[in-house]
Length: 98
Image (cartoon, rainbow, N blue to C red):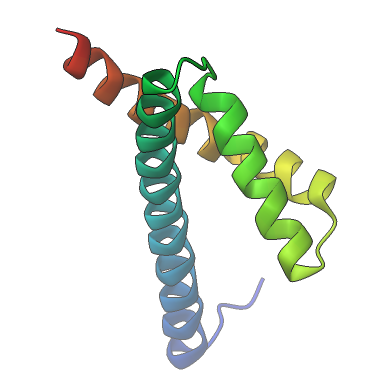
């Protein structure tokens, strides 16, 4: 099996790094949004969990981007991104409750 030239390997590594950074940024952004929405809705007397809010936001983004929502949701579940966003939001909510 041939090893790709250093320039191709470097470009591939940079694309992977950008993708990983984008996923992490998205996870934190979704968590932050879910946290604030849960708190705001709770203040209004409504109870929604972070997973529902994160999933709805992803679906909204898919519709806006004309992308198949099921494919995106399945990919994010497989990568653990949805779970990570929910975990981060729940950690913040627990800190607020303490």
